[in-house]
Length: 114
Image (cartoon, rainbow, N blue to C red; front, side, top):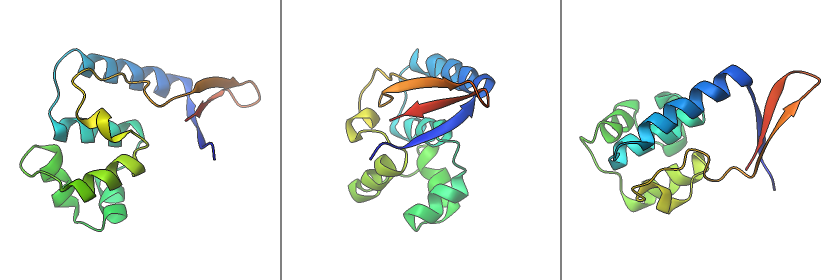
């Protein structure tokens, strides 16, 4: 099943520029988890609920103070729609996993197909 969601053009451009700037340096696992979460516009609370952990646990993982188990990382991978190896690859492609981006002329929003 193809999942799509609409993002206004301004937000898509900001998101792309933000992820592109991050890709210029090497990111740790926690930072990549944060990038993946923010790319999906999820709050720490939302991710924590999906993972059945506290928000402070998500925060600690993103800050590199805690390391997620493989089971937890698999869930994060699924929730953020990123392949598991993306979290370990040193060269982040901010558009990884995106098949197409289309402009909906009726409402001016972009539709992203994963």
